[in-house]
Image (cartoon, rainbow over all chains, first blue to last red):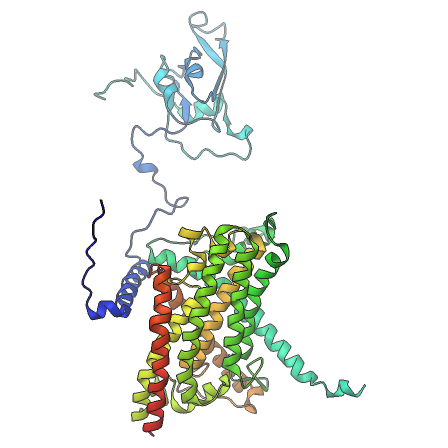
Length: 176
Length: 381
């Protein structure tokens, strides 16, 4: 349905348009002046300033492997994370524990654990699915490399990034 | 071989030297840094920062760090130029090759040619600081500036696709329409000065005060006060027409991004595109220079002594000559900043509004203004 748009009644000064141009120029100049005097708050200058201290608890950064308080690997290479990973970024080669270890016949451990960070989508499904609470998304977000091989995080790198996670972690506990 | 002796070698050498100095040492650096200023000022006006990173890559030469000057980002024009030079020179298959290659040249050359008659300084090394001190100065400027439309029209036509075509059509009608008011608004100025030569225009303003600011010679007569009205109108009409002639916002319909992708240069890439860009900014510089010469006293600054042909070879005279040149380009740069400031203030006109403004208002105002000036000149002595 067509309807008529009411045109505003313009005064003489509005009709000749030049005073409005001057008013507009004054507004833009005010913005310019405030920027030059540093009164306007602008975006963070990224590489110099970072927001790391304000990252929330639930931040999903790079996936990492963690050890428990005794320094043992939590991962038992059940490969659930490998199967659930949507972009198939995780590759696990399962292996035995050393025969002199107390847990040699009880558990397994990954011989190799690789996460291709050029594939990872930081979805956090590996963390959710892990029955041993061994894989966590930590707060590293600047993952860079000069070629594809650099972008693959190997086991040492994953443990280095992950550190230790002592005790039982109630990761599904909504009260926490 | 007598004719060799008749050729004014000194004049030719001096003209070539002045042209090279003007184009390569002044205009092209100003063009590239106007592009930078455009981006930076637009960012500041919109509460952003703009390009503030690009330094000069001295680390490539073995230094420890890149050279970051106080503001940052001053290397941006250099990086842009390198990028334009290294990009692929792509000519689409559906274009009319000859005109497609000719158009960028025609956009650049007239803009630089207009600079030939503009006196950008007084005297240096016993030479008048104008490439060609011709008596038809301002007519030459208008004649050459109107050739500039061919670059845009040919680009739009030869690209053989719809958006450049629409841009080219718009450019034609817009530039032809606004040339009328541009020329007519300059007539009152020329009536007051009584001469077409641009050096004489500056000499008149030295003697009688700048046209727009007639008190710069220290006194204000009744005649000057009355002439202030037509000169002011003339200045406003001339400036608005100059915005339209150089395709600056609010009149940038030939390349309005939101409607026509990029308008007439949609199909262009790398250095050919850069030539359009350079031509547009060179035209801005030429236009601002004309405004400075006609209305703002050219290179003259009140209370500053003026060097003569004889004194211009002495150190003091040369220093003065340099100051005159700097004053001229300081005024031009101030106008360029104003161009940028206006660009980020006003939205684009609709095409019918553009035509209405040109034909129904500016044209008539400029025409009536001539008669007002004539009446004042005839009645008030």
